Length: 439
Image 1 (cartoon, helix red, strand yellow):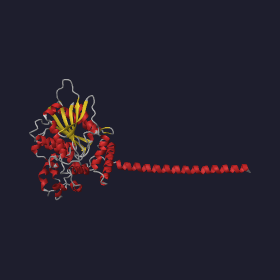
Image 2: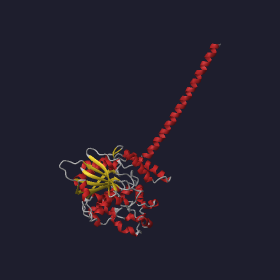
Image 3: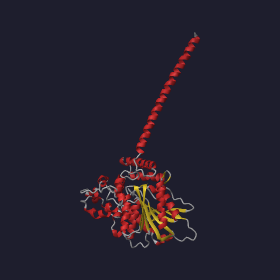
Image 4: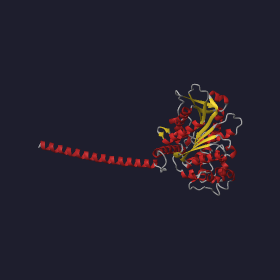
């Protein structure tokens, strides 16, 4: 009787364990299924966020999508901080950049890197080691991009670019650390760059850095290209500057804010890195304007036919005559018969050639030095550069237009991990090659 009872208890215990094990297995399978569903949903959402339809000719498309997704996510986080009135979104972005990417000057056996002040403006100097029997070096004043609001001469991107330029060209590179939006607005970025360049062009300063006064170029990318072109124009008019610039080299420069519907703006409206709406916002930030103007500016309401202030400038950037047919394609001009006169009234700097060098008169173009302009097909600013090249050519200036069909805005600085693009290496090498042959 006792044995039978013990056996019954053991069988009941086995049954209980079996039931518990089955229950645990079902729970495990259920949790695994839930985890799988959640993971699938996260992957799908990530893919949806990252994926963008890109032209088939764009090089490294998935890298570009990931880069753009990173930019958008960071911008959205900073915009949230801005909306909560905790800080200006551009200030937050620059804090993030400064925290993770700013480098202290670090010299090597071949390049001496130091920070200096040129007439109150911070610069980073890149000086190659002296070579035997060498007397004077050539030099490039370089101005970084970033929409007049972002980046720094001290970030790894520009530190790396200027170091490679110094090594490849055996040249002294002056990288200008101009002040940024929102701390300052136009024309302070222009003034900082002009002051630093004029200071460097003084004979005693050139002698200090062993620079040949006849072999100096000014260069910049994007908003830096804008500042380089504007400073080059200003210096060409300044008789007090005795040492003149030999060359200017502009990398996908932004040169006008009158027409946001050129063929390249229409073609690349939502292109990664620099979509049209972001470029308009950069302009508004540069001028400390009102974001409410952005929708009107996107459709050229700020330069409509009834706005008399814009009339004299319209012919200077008439893309129907300045662009080759291969770039005009089938796009049509967007010209509004009536618009918002208050935009030009509140932001007159839209018509200031120090902000928009493409609007300068022919007499100023005739004074410009030999020029290199690099443009990318997949870039809203493509036509700014091409129109500038055409106006320079028409004024008798020797111009090299270096166009890349598969490249995108900003690509030239993306040559180091984790943003290492083949297009970055090709554009950088082509740019440096032209400088080596012409400076």
